[in-house]
Image (cartoon, rainbow, N blue to C red; front, side):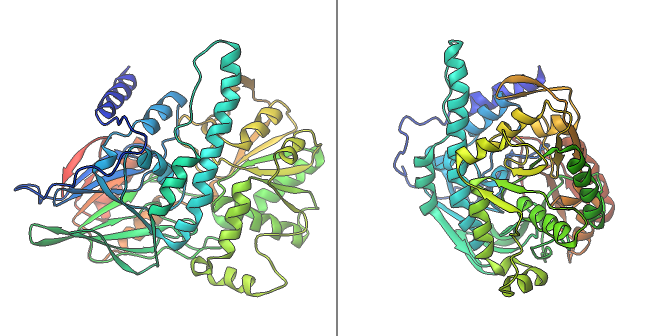
Length: 503
């Protein structure tokens, strides 16, 4: 009941900002700051006591910018409401500063534009490059998923659905992107200047340091976005930030520790050897950005070393194919080992003989009729949309098959239900008994765990005086906040959704 009240309140609040026109003009000029408006304010409009839908509204001298604009992922009805109806007026936002390209941080940008935003969207060069295929892919998947669901609704005479946004909305969004190099200082708004550092999470991910003018004083705010881990394959280790007054930090794994990355080849080899004996289909739901490329590099090493006999690998995601090409085009984000492989004309870190990239829909459908053993990597990573749903639908009932979870699964997503070994799950609204085996390894995670988060904060000099813990389920955030108080800032807050604080 409490969740329903929160959802209804969010929906009613957002209706105040509905716009009649699909693409209104920019509207009235933003009024100058009045007396008392010089305070810096921060409103947590998403990813507060929850993992997805990162959106934080920062008000500086009466003018508003947005840190991230992500899609919420969870229960279908709640996701529909939160993603379709923003809880702030899009036309009042004058700029967006984006931490990285994952859709729970960037995927609501077309909704923001659809509802009247016309400012600049600041991102790293690699993030800006990734957004074009990712946002078009998001719009395409929404259209296809809605089309699939509406066929069933039409037969049952149920109300039809519409996508949250379409490709036209993406087309209006992309010209607003302003790419920046790591380390480059840039103006966001009068009184707000920013600089990106490498977060080490995915290609192009950024730590953001903001210098904010506050009544004649300067306030330095740091935002981690998603903080990565040291010594992950492909990308560089996370950098640090300095001289912060306030820290906005993620807590996805705020009360958990990852398995050692050294165990990944051993665990994966064991699972694949068993899959070959049983002639299994191995379904790996994986984010098209980052996770797919990491899994591919590990599989390549296993096959080339002879630890696992050959078996076909299909990356069934047009987005992953496009993203892999973007990876090759942005060596400024790579660690030394990956750079060396790229410079070797005989070696491709993202390809090998057994690997097939699938673009065509008919080829994707044919995989469902093909006998194992085989490996299918397909998006989305949380099993909420895209081709992976069709593969799960066709494979989940066979006890020979393996569903291999390699990334974080948000609460109430299909991926989380599979990870928790539910006996029956719903796919496209229909119930399916789960007979396939499900295994999880979180050593692939690109999020820093509790120890890694605390170590990163421990490297900040001087320590921030205030911290806000976001982007984690409530239990993870609260536990991490307690640990942070003992070793970091004295004032640590776990904000609630919709809360506004004066900095």
